[in-house]
Image 1 (cartoon, rainbow, N blue to C red):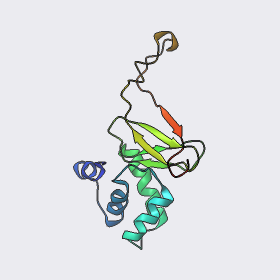
Image 2: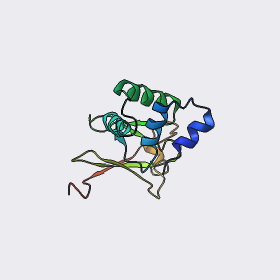
Image 3: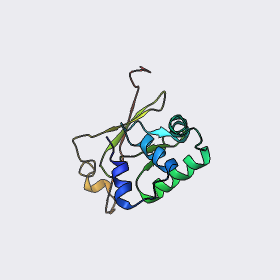
Image 4: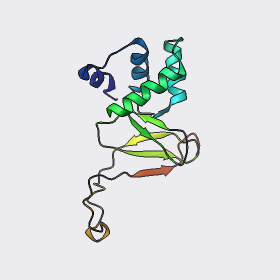
Length: 136
């Protein structure tokens, strides 16, 4: 579970009804929704919410560093509320679903010194790809 709503409250983020609904939709099981999916789910809770408001709110949450924008293989951007907990992503090569995973190894430690080419490496992004159960 994400702690997005708690983080936003702690920041003193102005919680209009529209912003609250977008945050509620994102705060959950880390299925990494597209903006259109966030809008559709938000509209079920608040029918008058506009697509522009959803897009603007997502942009603001990304700018604040409270949501991560994830894009894979040129597909629609997806939004990850798990911005403050280290994790990697598992992506379905067919439908594009993205899930958070927590491998036990350290990807920074796995890069041999001779492969760093003098870089001071500060982070690593690993993406696992395969087929989800529905697509397999």
